[in-house]
Image 1 (cartoon, rainbow, N blue to C red):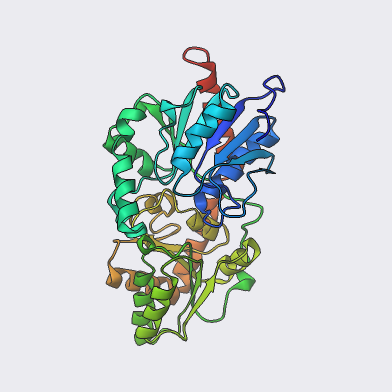
Image 2: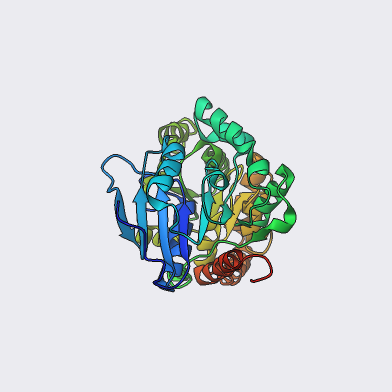
Length: 382
């Protein structure tokens, strides 16, 4: 491991502690957020180090998006490896530490030697038991319990109002929490109405985890098919439920209407978002639901569960439709309405583009920078 950056080089010295970086095979939305926000801060002259977990064959250290990436431990040992690596190699090198809370807390206030800022995507709570095996889910649920005590005095960034509400309900002071929504790449995600498919096409985009509830979408597609709607579904993403849901498609008799595409590149994702008529996301809980905004920027409205995070990134009746989570009949009806009504679909498409245009990574990074500068300056000096 190389020596820490020179504190005299200018800009803030920021350590971001996250479970993963974007190159990790398990990376998701939180890792995109890390690179988009803190990569911009690095380009603005701040010195960013990301302390993350590794995986078999991973380089122990690299540079990505202008950030120094330090990998220690593995997925299930990182919570022990991170404090040890900090004490051994990184102590005294930073002005501020950002804990990127996405899976389970790392309790950085107990071992960091600089001011800590908590960046919260979402907490699992009971939904952990839909996202992981019972032993891991139980550990996640238990590790969330001390959050109010450990982080009570820590300045906190929440990526959505839903996450802020969850943190306040758990006991964190509302006055300590500031909402900084995720952004999207507005130059990359743009509409192309000529790319739309001839037949009604839905898109599910995300990791194939149980809490994403793709089964609801599959059942809705089967219902629409029975009603005579020539609907198709593209499923872009990988995960441990892929085989289960592929079998369900067969059991429902819609295997010829569903394409399981697996992991897709960013360019392929853009094509799918542009060509689809409706994007659909039925998770029981999200921190934000960034794919809703990416779809919206491409002129594709979303039908989503009326669930934490998703209700922040979809404006019901303006950029898409929200339905009661788990209500198969309501989901079927909402999808059928948009697919069958050209005027409604066009209105929602325009609203989605307008709404998405107000969210950029540049704005998110600037907001985060102001918060970190204020924390480093200290009370009364920001």
